[in-house]
Image (cartoon, rainbow, N blue to C red; front, side, top):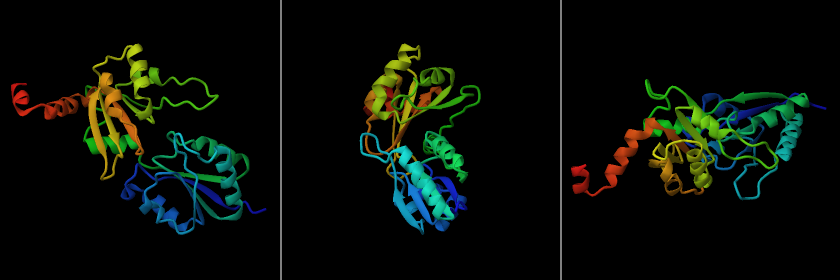
Length: 253
């Protein structure tokens, strides 16, 4: 049985095709077969010269079971030399990469990982606001409130409380619960937040507010979004509020 193939877990980045790494673009052109997530930009998919198999997961919709994806990758590696598993953002951050790597290595299949730009970094670039800031934000945490069926409870609340800046992934649909959990744990309701949807893309949307108003500004939709929490966003949030005021009220403020 041929086991000479390598499975490459490749990060497609946050959305914009030109944020793809040079290595990722090269592998997509060389791959015999590419298993790709949902919401990968069409221009990135167009770089794939081999077969293209959609295996993406979408919240609330029918999606490919992880165990079946693992099997598909192993079967492909036994048949082809270059196999790509194309994931949104970075494979190693909330991408279930560990499950795929463990499954493949247990079967003697070689795995390589190609990093990608993750949503929190792209969102920070769009905002022009650093996740860290001298004298104000020295620590950052990346969390998600989502917990799979049968998994142990997440400690995301404690992680957010311990960090100066938090990037909350896959949280737009759970904004009310996120707000309630953090405030109940002692996070001030007035803590500044920013919600960035479709980071790095022309259609991106940015909304500022506070933890108390998170549910009102999160507006979950088809496009992925990241919630940024911390005092680094205070100035931008205040400016956004002033911009919404009538000119006379803004002048008096």
